[in-house]
Image 1 (tube, rainbow, N blue to C red):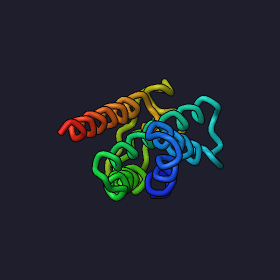
Image 2: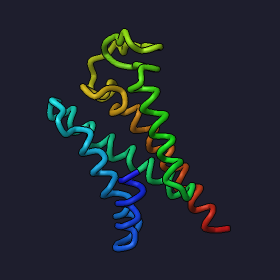
Image 3: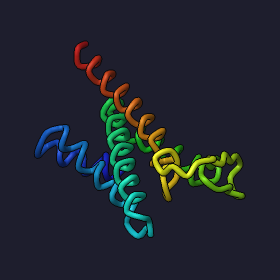
Image 4: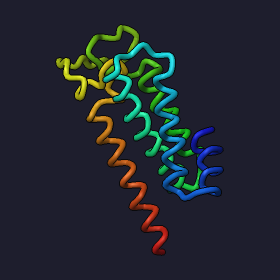
Length: 143
């Protein structure tokens, strides 16, 4: 809520929408590596993925006109992945309801130490949703 509610709106007033979306999204990515003992590669993956998902959440908020919609999507994601509903990683998670163990050590596919959320598969998903939101915004602007 802070990134897409407060920071995005403050930056939008001072600069343009691109800056207003990118800066809080990059900060969102950065906070996900603070305090983590990740390798440089995994940290870079998390920074990129966190920034991309931050952009996606921002576009959801802009398209819907409400920060609450991006907050709901973010919360559902956290409940599903962090809350033990689903685990997709290199090793089994005994606490998850559903677990899929990736038979790969390729950090691009697995997302490295952070997990599937920073994988190329997740990045593609973030990009698809972001592009869909941008198309919807442009369509609304034409009407």
